[in-house]
Image (cartoon, rainbow, N blue to C red; front, side):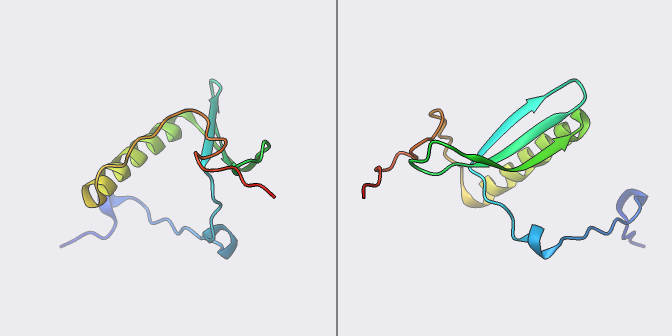
Amino acid sequence: MEDNNQNNQPHLDIELSEEVAEGIYSNLAIITHSQSEFVIDFVKIMPGVPKARVKSRILLTPQHAKRLVKALAENLQKFEQIHGKIKDVDNGFPMNFGGPTAQA
């Protein structure tokens, strides 16, 4: 007989509002921490614009931050198995995204 609740964990209903389901685009994450929490600020920077705004801030306990890192690593591995290796480009702070600067 198959158990629908894996490891006998209680069922958790997670609600996703329409607004949150749309998501927020971010191309920069700034991570800071204290002894009791990790703070991840998600930022959207635009080419040629010297100022950027934090679009979302997430606060995590150290234990949850560690679980998040593990889950991201597992999902990246699965993604690369299907779609191929992700090219790692880490050349500093991408202010102009490597493209031409627009002129008016």
